[in-house]
Structures are given as C-alpha cells and as structure tokens.
Image (cartoon, rainbow, N blue to C red; front, side, top):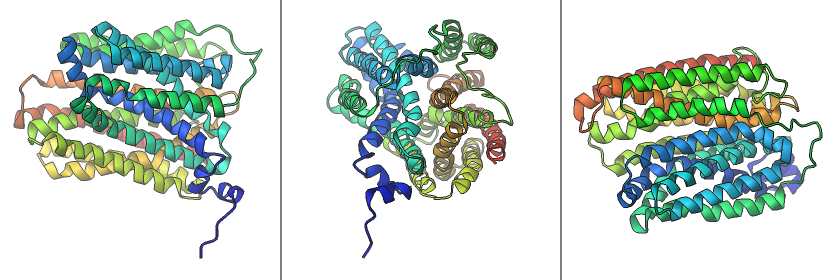
Length: 471
C-alpha cells in the first residue's frame, strides 16, 4: 500500500501533489487563472468577431480588436514592474483586474464599434499587467521545490486556453451570441480578484522607488508595437514596409533611452547573446516569432488548399496544445534541475523540426506532415518554456526579478505581433488575394514558412547559448 506523505514532505519533495495541498492550491488556481484569461482573450476573437461584424457592420473590427488588445497588453506588461514597485503587487493586480473587467463588460454590451474596440483596449492593458505579475509572484507565493511545477502548470493553462478558447467561444457564439463569448471572462475575472485579495500579501510603499512614470520610453515602445500592428490593417506592401521600418526605429530609440537611465524597464544584459538573461530572452522572442506563421496561416491554408473542414482544421491546433501540455507535465516532473535546464536547448530544436515540417508541407505538397509537425512544435514549447522562465527569473538578482518576470510574457506577445505583421507583409508581396485556393495558395504561403524556419533556426542558436550560460 502506498504511503501518504505529510503535506510538508510532499512540498519538500517537489511533487505535483504539492500544488494541490490546502496551503498552495488556491495560489496555483489564481496564477493559472491569470494566465488562462490572457490566452483566452487574445485568441477567442477570431471566432466571435465575425458575428459582431455582422451585427455592428464594421469590417475593420476584426483586425483592430486583435491588434489593439496585443498592443496594450504589451504596454501593460512593460509597466507592470514599475507599478508593482510603486503600489505593490496586491493593489496593482486589483487595479488591473478592475480595468480588465470594465473592458470586458464594455465589449460585451457594446452597441457601437468604437465601444467594442475601447473595451478590447482596456482588456489588453489590464491583462498585460496581470500576466506579468502572475510570473513575478511565483517565487513569492511558492517554495523553491514547487516553482518548476507552477511554471509547468502555467504553461498547461496557456496552451489549454489559447487553443481551447476558440472552441468555447465558437459554441457560445453559435448557440447564444457573440456577446456571451466576450462576457465569458467576467466570472473568471471576478474569481481572480477575490483570490488576489485573499492570497497576495500587502506591501508597504518603497520610499526609494522611482516616482516618475517612464512615459517617453513607454510611448516609444507603444509606437513600435502599434506600427507593427497597423501592418495587419493595410493591404499596401509599401505602407507595410514603411511601418516596419518605423517600428524598428522606435525600438532602437527605446533601447537607447532605456540603457541611459538608472531606472530601466529592461533587466541588465536583456539582449546579450552570451550573458543571462540575454540569450534566454532571445529564445522567448524568436520561438513565437517562428510559430506565428502557423498560428496565423496554417488553418487558413488547410481549408483553402486541402479543403479541410473547420473541425478537421481545428484538430491540428488541438494536437499542438495537447503535445505542449503533456510535454510540459513530463518536463516539470523531472527532479533534476540540471536535466531540465539542458532541455531548454532541446525545445528550439523540436520547434525547428516542426516548423521545417510545415515548410515541407507547403513547398512539397505533403499534407500528412502537418500532424507530426504540430506535435513537434507543441513538444518544443512544452520541453523548454516553463524551465526557461524559471531559470531566467531565478538567475536575476533581487532588483531585476520583477523586470525579468514582466518581460517574459511581454516578449512572447511581441513575438506574435511581429510575426503576424511580417508574415502578413510577405503574404501580400507573394500575391495573396481573396478567393485564392488550391496550388496557387500553397505557393503563396510557402515563402512564409521558409522565413519562419529561419527564425526557428535562430532560436536554436540562442537556446544553446542559454544552456551554456546557465552552467
């Protein structure tokens, strides 16, 4: 008969059961809920928005509802560390949740397009802060033996919500209305606020904290992300290229300003190629940048080229989510931190093979490669994502942990934003137009996956550098 360990022994052993103990279960639910809300609200609009467009009559809603959510989520993430230092995690999370709930209510009740878009802006800004602090609170609320399990649980929550969200939203939209899909986050958001009030400790104001909002730097990074997002609402390649150049200039200005101040938004060595957290942050940016080609255009291609039904195409997304979740559980269950750190280098390799498979699918017209490729991409994320986040936060000193924690989900969203804009530009240059299908559509999409493969290869380089630096 299996012996039952006392609670303290289960926690000290770093068992998954430690997350389910009375002391840590509510904290686990709270952090996973914050992550799941972000992923759900980022991706469900692709299903619910067409119905909103039919009711409100504004076709431009689709692009703006996704883009502005992402823009303001990135801005919220960039401000999260400053807000936590100024007001404390508890007050910041409650305020961000109030903004998110107000935006959700506004969007679900909107009678005009402007109100729906404004609601999405508020949702994005609130959730950007929330998810950043959900990473930062892990080492605060949990003992070290459980930290890897919490990161694994958050990775599972992200994968499940990102790919299950569209399914839930589709059912709500089909059988109730698109407003029900928008309002679905309200109960979970309210539960999150209650858990924050019960679990997050109060913090005293730090007298030495910088009281001035880093406004100029936030404006420059906001301009950069907005310029990237605007690429998704224009069909003119020259305008897209100009916007991308403007975004690159704004990013350069932001980095230059941030390096010159003692109160930086970015942690030291943020984009070094050799010293942590630099190479790990590059991996955090490049993996979503590579996989966003599939996230944006794979389902579209499956239906337009190989005439898959929506349910059959949805299975492809589900495969990635399942692979990500099961791999994350397996990796987080490995007791050796050294082995888990080594797997950080394996993740980008698996992702690169998977993206290479999608590239071969498009270039060589080999449809069956889609399925193992999606499994490999999911396994790539699952084998390294949680461990990478844990390593980078643990490696940072006390004054840098909040900055690093906030930057991780912000960089992930930035990778998706840059990828969506870049592949959109490339698709237009390749001749993507309404009604294109079959072999001509396959030839148009093939260059996108070739470029994505290049980004994936770059993530392998930085993955190896991360493993080397961690030693």
